Length: 203
Length: 197
Image (tube, rainbow over all chains, first blue to last red; front, top):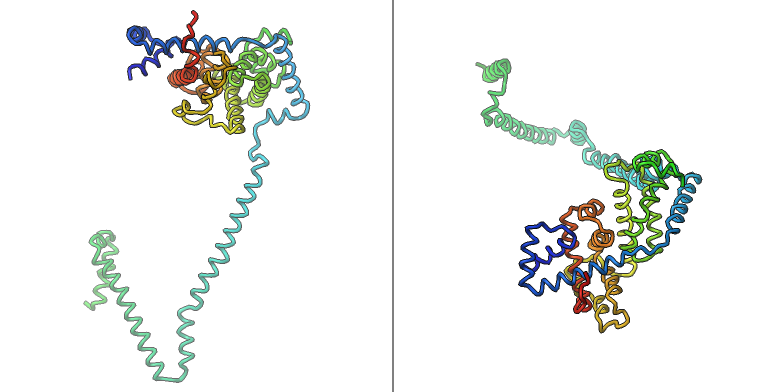
């Protein structure tokens, strides 16, 4: 573990990044560690060889020729109308993106048509008649059959009573089941409610 | 080259180049090209590639010149473009060669490539320098870039960090790892070779 740390410090020292304090610790370690001494020697050899790889090998004329070539390219760009391509701000929608935008628009339109026609059509099919139309069509079917009419009326009345009971239950639950209901009413609303209850109870 | 241009400061040349002066931009390129070329060459080890990438670097920089806000020096900015272009080029080349150059460094010592570096594997390429060139080729690009800037170009960790877009500590760590990898694969050649001061 200690040697691994020292290896990092050896590398830092080669690059001149090791503090004086660490350098003293490293030197002390190297005195007693043959393995780290060998490692340091290897790194220094690699450093020397690597620097020799960076030797300048290009002829001086190359640099001048290189600038001339670059200048020619830049001029060609400027003269060929490509300058505007290089120096203008990028287009908001580069041409390649138009295909994607078109495809996305088509998808949105298709979804819109589906919702408007298919979904709306489905809901109309579920409720083709109104309540009145349904009842009237039944009465038309009953015609002059009084027994049948009586039977239907009583069934209808029972259904209305049942539904009214449910609604009344909901109202009762809303009014009496909610302890904050009365508190949420204004004084005028409470007076109105009071008068309606009295009227209902014939007080 | 216009002699007047040679007397102008970099900032002035950048301002003129932004207004469309090709001469001003060419002067900036002239001042930077040698360092840019050798930085690229250090990573590609090939003159043609380094030449092409140097030209591409300056063309790309010219293209993006209006985006350069002078937050760093022109050269740092161009260096960054050069390093990124070169890394992309090397990644592409590596993919084409079917080499797994970007895997975790942990497995680098296990690669079959290193077998070719052993003295028994190739007696013709016995010189350490040649082996070092080959070994540098095999280390992952992030480490190679750091090694190139610090050792071959003689940059400080801070300057290399600025160009590579990372912290100094990261550069320091990459240098350590790069050296460790190189030392591991060159060990047979380093044994017995005395370091010459």
